Image 1: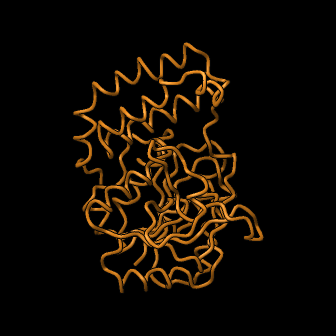
Image 2: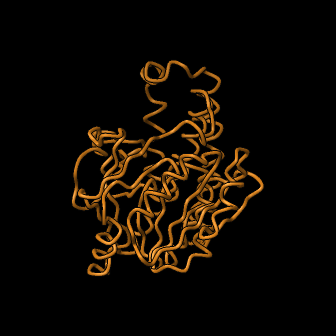
Length: 293
């Protein structure tokens, strides 16, 4: 059995298309679970009418990681399919193909396809999400085919349930962003492999509805908080200090890269908040073994 877990927040129309693309697979043994993060559109009304869908209602937006963990806890499948509500699976027979691969490769924890940003599936959005040594998104590497991908995107990915249970699920510190990289990092440290099947194609709209709105400064704060946490937790203190030094050793170059960031925000993020993060280092490292499912 496959348990397909969707997280929804004000995306009823897109969610319908995402779920329908799974039904079009004609995969016989599948259950659909939707975790709604406090939607204010007509999502709940529509979901309440779908008797074949298991619904978990949250009163507020708990974030992608917490919601996926909620769905995983009630899942009965041998495999868990995570799929964004603004994505569509476009390849017939893809689920059978991916489960066949997992059945014959027991050392593989997760498989996915490749992602496109246009309806015609011509513009490659991502092969496998990659980061540079500082934990920033590496776009060229993310578009490059690779046999041993470091990360599989939760836009669309099929994980082995036993592997998720062994590593403990998603770290709920990540509201959204970095949660898939963190999980895959832990899976690989447990000795599991990841795989991308390029014949499986996924359309990702990357839709504005259902996303938290942040301005440039707000996003910078949010991104750096998660990046620093990820580096400390998974790559250690030395890498964290090296990445911090890159930000502060040449401030003029930094401000050319990020001209929107005021000096007081720069000091707040890379001095005050960095020190706070360092003080939490023992607690952060301890979270590596915390289980949430």
